[in-house]
Image (cartoon, rainbow, N blue to C red):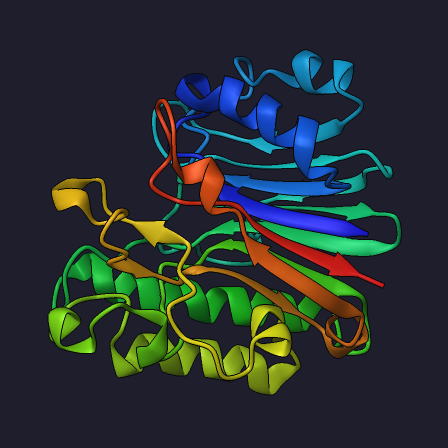
Length: 259
């Protein structure tokens, strides 16, 4: 299985880029974030013509997550459900479906905006709810892959300059502790299975100040997988070419091959 994640920062603006990517990347499953579309306006027929079934959870001009699959898609759910209080209630930030025996979850973790704001506090709470939701519905022995824009750089080597981010969201100890708690539950950062020691492998570059061309980026687009899946990952790549050209997203797709 080849599986990928991509924050497209508006599917309406980026649909030709996504179609192009599907044409050359040969992915079986693609998780999308920040579609910024309602369910009514999601281009499911376009993807079906390309051979992909899809499920989308959208709210309109903000957020929005989707899963595209050419290996089957079933048992779709969105959000945490009625048993949980979502700190970002009303936002479309999580959708899950089963694709060829793998429970795939596409997430768009809240940004948090600035430390010491209620947005940051709710971001931490949202990650706690994700942990409880995961624990209630799955075990680490299941085949589960949670892919998306986590808005957290797991380590200092995942940002171009740790000094430049001091006091900012995405790199705080509290945010990284939430990721570590999920890993302790039984999830593995699949990218680090392939590149355990490398740095400079980013997936996001701000549009401003030529950050992409100067490689001032962050690795915040992650795939956390249960061990049964992570052990199958033998290749991964950030598709930097998708960040180039006309109207790119500020994120690049991250692709994983599972044996």
